[in-house]
Length: 411
Ligand SMILES: Cc1ncc(COP(=O)(O)O)c(C=O)c1O
Image (cartoon, rainbow, N blue to C red):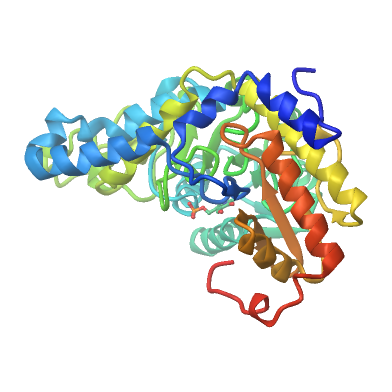
């Protein structure tokens, strides 16, 4: 065990002192005194991301102007940034690119898979507790393509895929309770049944080990604004296994996915590489920030990051249970992603009371509190102190204030 779970505030300080990942925090531009438990929702800015954004806006845009498409590498930035990210999901560099949102990429990948006949049947399957956008997109696509659609009970998606040989849209880590799935085992079942899994890696990338190639995964997508700290609205990534790239065609064949966009050919010819999944002009400033943010991961061993996340999670689950909260996440670290959720009838007010103490966590309706445990910048002492604050808020009922009941548009 690289990390031990602290049993006191002093032991949390001692563990931080010997933490081999402690230096990773220096990459972040964090406000002093803030405990940020929302890195699984919007990762904080790194100095490198801000510098890259500044460089891109102040020099490449302001001075380089249109020349920067060539001179600053803008034209290939979606591909080069994808290549940089590939190691974090256990993929080859040529199998990953940055494009669009997770919502759009699920649409593109599932539609391409349906058209190419990658699965024994065309049934699209999703569990009812998947992230809502995954459900909306999957159902809408089934209507558009005349494919059968099954929204199945939580925990029964893999069985439905085995039964039908259809396409299952599946998160590696559940957004609500952090339950983690066994990608290799489920891919094996998919192969046996003639089914296909399209992985949503949003809550996994940058916090647990993801081994797409090793598991034999075919298709995946995921957010970059969470644990990868790419910035608000940073574009997502998509992965296509190398032997499938040329077999799949995007249902949105825009000019940036063309083999040679600047020939302005009226006929579409898809690019021979992963860029065939691009459609329109990429958001260069966001891509620049993401590319800078990924530098924080460059020399890091992701298995160490995952080990720290597990123990930070153990600390939250054990202390949450001690103070009488119902933990909704798996108690065993190996079964959990990078966040821990627990429920309380006054979850919203509690999250607001934490924010008043400069501790940011998130609330998911109706009664869930989530603590995201980004190992690059969080220390054990931060989590220890956050749990102390939570215990105090519950004991004193200081959450019980009118102002904490008011709900903002984004919670
Ligand atoms: C699991 C999961 N999938 C998809 C999304 C949405 O992704 P996007 O906004 O890029 O479409 C989120 C956003 O938080 C998410 O948590």
